[in-house]
Image (cartoon, rainbow, N blue to C red; front, side, top):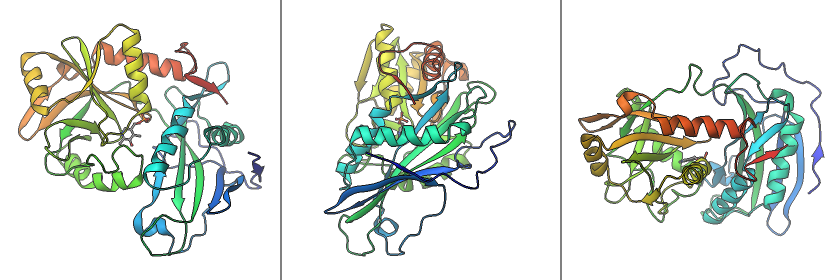
Length: 354
Ligand SMILES: *Cc1c(COP(=O)(O)O)cnc(C)c1O
């Protein structure tokens, strides 16, 4: 793939050093775009100034939501290298989502090359304070102007970049989680395991409900029996029960997180028994009652590792690790962020230099 480059003639001022960089609100000077048309395939890969894109009001994405996205980060290492964390896994997951929502896939090497080229061009935008990074948002939208319900015949693949602040400016902070019993996010056979925008629309109502009750995230139950825990907002969920690491098994309605996979691999390396299985909310509350629920944490690109201090289901509330941070949770956070920043050598191939 040969990427055409059109550099901006009006570079924006970089954010001030003390800017807290609220998540996803500031965008860099450039974006990557590539078109697709049936019969022609993907064409005209280009890096151009970040700007609005003209769209037909009839574009299919506006009507039936044929859209997918990915989320990853670029970090500036102490030695000046720019590092990506397992980007080929994002390319693969994007292609898996393409298959599920009937979009054309992108060769993994081209996908990763586009990310690297764009990050290289806007490298000055990678913030340097501890915990900060350059968030990378690749996405694909259906652009054919037609109102029939069927896969679009044309698409845009776009990548934008956003410098983001530390997720925990005051250090790792436990979050409070609301177990949702009324609404569901996804069902087996639906879109749950695909990173499609549609899943997030389905989640908004419960998120507002949880926020109003003073909880920062929703823990979803399975969509059929509303009995088994699935995942949290944009994070997968882990439990340490009597020394063993437990996480819900990927059953079709859970997003296969790259942080989840990495966390399982690290725990196994460290000698923990890791069980992927069904786990009911009732089992969790019983384990909490017995003192067997030792740690709970979420995993995802944005926060990396998020300790959970409280779980609430209906009127039942349990405090985990005394509302603090468990030692395995802290160790995972320190090691994953250390590997991502190039301060700790991780397993082979986990970081890629831009
Ligand atoms: C993206 C996402 C995650 C986390 O995936 P990572 O690859 O670890 O960032 C978890 N759950 C949902 C619903 C997501 O969209």
